[in-house]
Structure formats: structure tokens, C-alpha cells
Length: 348
Image 1 (cartoon, rainbow, N blue to C red):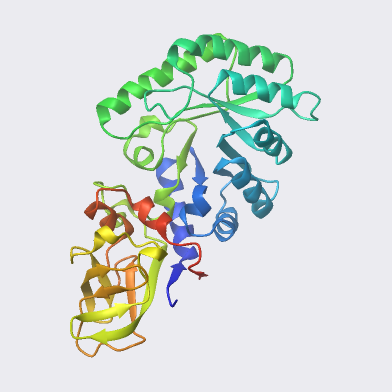
Image 2 (image 1 turned 60 degrees about the horizontal axis):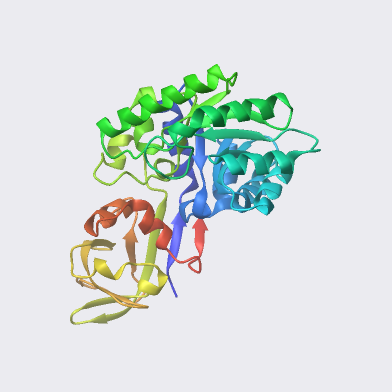
């Protein structure tokens, strides 16, 4: 296969600077779940550390441990999924910050931390309406009371309070923020005063200053992936860092055949000529996505070995990952994440 995902680490550095400038004085937590949105965890983490990032969002203990290995001990790593006591033990061993949104998991963590040299840092999660785990409001007062007891006993340190929001409408997000403020007040009444409060992800971190609090969790925007239906990357001051390319392997009367298809991650639903890809002659229609090859509208003098850009920053007439996503009713992250891990990542 000739396909390659080219990753522009200088663009990543510039995007990080742009995000930090926008959200200041709030801290940036760079989210690196799913192999840094398919761009390659180790290279992204090392570049981000060099750029001054000191918080990473790593989803689970396995990813958090990999971030710790790449970044060293000078950074904080937040994980928010722990499915078992083994996960908790792995997180403790790697000195990860843990998102806890379940009363039983809080007790499991306290038990696992008993006798540890340092109390684990936890971030308590209130469910503000997205229902992506988190403690329901009716259970929150008892939950923070118990967390305060465990903190007083030296079994944990409540470092943060956090939640997810839907970012579906301003009205829904305003309701979520009102509930988050109530949760903070309830925690304060229980004697909990966290050093970080975090609610916003990419879109809200740019568009809703009141949602930034002490820290924002930004993934997509740092990779130059804009929100579906939102401002362009250029309008946001960001640039896509990933460029998926493949070579022409055959030239036919009905178009050129390129060495990439659905098995490498291109959705077959992009077939039909709606999507534009980049070629030496500018943008051309993506006609058919097959299993291992795809058919692209031809151009004069097309030749075997020519490069076709399936998605990227638009310099060759191609669409961005989010442009493609909007054609099939999904989000840009899904397009980036579908790129097969067997496709080499090439860094510059």
C-alpha cells in the first residue's frame, strides 16, 4: 500500500499556541485519546511537552501510562475511565489524576490507595445532563460529603471537579453550566475546594469564555479538526495537522485508481462524487470507495505514481476531515480515527 498519513508537528505546535492564547488564563489540557486522534501518541505528546503543555487527557489508564512514558514526570495526566481495580492500580502506579463519577468507584479507589505513599488525585464528576457517566445531581451532596471524609482521612486528594457538556445548543449548555455551578457550591459546603474546575472541550473553549474555568480539555482543535457545522479551521486560526495521501496505481478511461479504500478507513458512504480529493490538477470527485482501492475523477496527464490527497489542509483542492464528515452526517474526528493503524504515520 502506498498510503501515508503525513503529520505536521509544526502545525500542531502552532495550533497549541493558538488554543492557549485563546483560552488564557485557563490552562490547556491536550486530549490524546485514541492514539492522539489517530495521529500517533508518542510523537504528539513529545511535541506538546516541548510546546509547554503540562496537562494531558488520556481517557484510560493504559493510555495514561503510555503518556507518562513519553512525557516523563513533569506533566499531569488526567484519565476518566477506570473499568476495574486493575485499572485503578495501574493509574496509581503511573501517578495519574483520576476522574471519578461513581460512588462505588470512589470507595474502590480509597481501598486501592490504602497504604500508598501518596494520596491519589481525583476529579469528581457531576452529570450535567449529557449522561456520559458522572454522579446524578440527587446523589451529588452525599457523594461530595463522602469524598471530603476520604480526603480528611488522607486516602485521596480532590484535585478537580469536572463534567462533559453536549455543545449541542447554547441553551442546553447554559443549563449544564448552571448545574455545574450548583455542584461546585455543594462541594464547597462539604469542605472541598479543588485547584482545577473543567467543563469545556474544543468548541465551548473558543466560543463560550464563561465555560473555561481553570482548565479546558481540547482535543480536536489542537489537531486542526473543526467542529461540524462550525467555523472553518482558518476562521479559528487553526490548521489541520494530518494529510492522508495515496498514489495513483492505474489510469482508466473512467478515472484514476488510488491505492486506498474502505479497509484502510475511507467510508464507502463517501462514494458518488460528492467528496473532493486533491490531485496535481486540483480538486477532483471521489467516485467510488472500494475495499482496497478507490476511483477518482481523472485529469489531463494523470499518471501512475501521482499523489492524491484524500483529506488535509486544502492545499491541493482536497476536503478537510470535517468537510468529509459533514457529507455523511458525522464529525471530523471519526474520519481521522478511521485511518487504519497499518497506514504509516510520517512526521515533519
